[in-house]
Length: 256
Image (cartoon, rainbow, N blue to C red; front, top):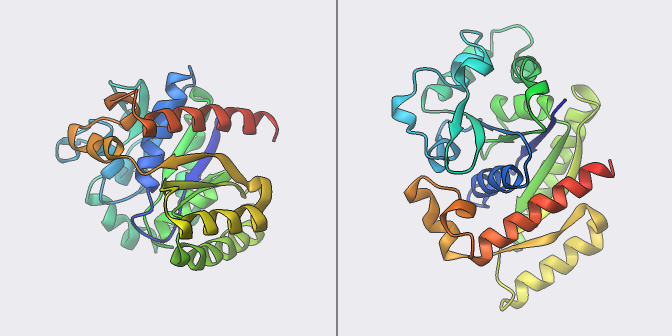
């Protein structure tokens, strides 16, 4: 059975999709069977995996409202050998339609149960909001990976996310835990970032991943080519860091 993880942070622009796509590629490069679920109506993880969201015949939207099975909608990221449950703007409509549906918080969990045995890891790229889509992701997951920049406002948003995870754990998904905090877009030359990093280590200890993802131009360029950074330029500092993160994830799961 697959280990299912949300990549979540209600703050936008913190590298959630970059982390989801490159972790998927990194794990696949380490011979893991990976499914990436794009749960964001913007469809950035879909595009970043080389799949044209405008051409989709079926997407995660149809899966959530019960019109299609997950295994029938999954597509292959050819550059990095992982599968994708793609998304496009149709998914925005699911927010409204799910409100009146039975078991609205667990639609994704039920859909992924059919394909869980086909993968080692299922990664869910959540939208940057505490929405019904994000709630579906949290209810389906075994744990949450929180990518965050080492900046003051990121710490403010982190406390809100931790409280949300506690509420979901208490009321909807008792398996849900924070797997770890991933420091992204890190610039060691900035004193503030180093100070915030030290605060994270002080308060969260071993919940902070050892791997640090540096600020890297090649990672930022990769989506415009429809490629994960790990496939776009394997020699870049960012790609090497995500490969290290994939290896650290595998080791962390063994200890759970």
